[in-house]
Length: 400
Image (tube, rainbow, N blue to C red):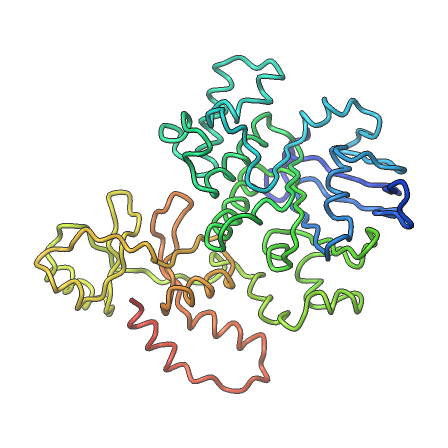
C-alpha cells in the first residue's frame, strides 16, 4: 500500500490496471468480458455501471479473483496479482456485498476483527481498530460492538460490513451493489457516509451499481459498460453528462441528464443559511422572540449535542409555555456531502421548503432552501425563461 499526498488530499490506496482481461465461460457463444483495458488511479472511486449482463460484477470479482480471468493481467500497484495466492490476495482487499454479508452468530466486534485475526494481529490492536472503524462509519462502539447482526437495522449492518472490509487497512475496497437492499433514505445516508470515509482514508474504491445517479454521486470516474464488457465511456461524471461518447451512453443516461447535473453539486458547495435553535424546556415566549428578531417563522429544537429533534413554527412553539420534547422522525436532513439532488428529494419527500444540514454524527450545521436548488436548475437551463420565485420563497418562509 502506498501513502501519498496529492494536492493536500491523503491517498492510501493503490492503482488498479487491467490489461487485455477477458472472461469466457465454457459453452457460451461470446465472452462475458472481452479484452478489457482499464486504469484506475490510486485513491479514486470508480463506479461501474451498465445494463444487466454487461460484465460489471464479473470484472469486479476478477480484481480479487473470486472469478478467475480467462486471459490478461491485473495489477494492483506494481504487483501482478494474476498468479498470486488467491486467499492471501483477498485478505489484502476489502470486499463489501449487499446486506453486509455478516456472520449472523458473531458479534459486531468479532465480525470486524475476522481478517485481522487471520493475519495474526493481537487483541489490543484489533480492539483499537474496531473502535476506530465503528466510529468512522457512524456507530457508537459502546452501543454496537457487542450486538449481533439480527439486532441491527439493514443500514447499520451495511455500515458494519464496510468497517469489516476496512479492518486490515487494505489499499483497495471492492463494493458489489452495496446499497441495493436498503430503503431510499438509508441509501442516501450510506452514500454520504462512504464519501466521508473516502475523504478520510483515501482508499481506492471500485463500486458496482445499476443506478447511474448513484454512480455520478459517488464516482470520481464512471465506467459505462455494454454487453460483453465493452467500454462505452470512461470519464468523470461531468464529462459524461456534458458529452456522451456514444448513442448507447446518451440513451443510458436518458432524458433526465439535466436534472442529473444536480448530482454534481454538493450541499457543501452552496451557501447554507443559519437557523434559530431552541432547547427542550426553554421558555416558549423567549424562543419565539429570538426567532422573530432573526426574521424567521420557525426554529429547530436540538438536544444537548446540537442534533435536531423537531422543526416547529413559532405558532406551534407558543402552544405550550415551554419547548416540548417532541421528536419528528420525518425531519428532512442532509449531509454536507449530499448532492443537491438528495436535498431536493428530502424536501419533496417531507413536503418541506428546505432541509437541515447535519454532520455525520447528526450535529446541526445549517439550512438549505428549495430556492437555492431551483436557481441552480434555472442556471443550467437558461432558455427555460423567467422563474417566479415568490412561491419558493413562501415555501421556505413557512418551511415546517
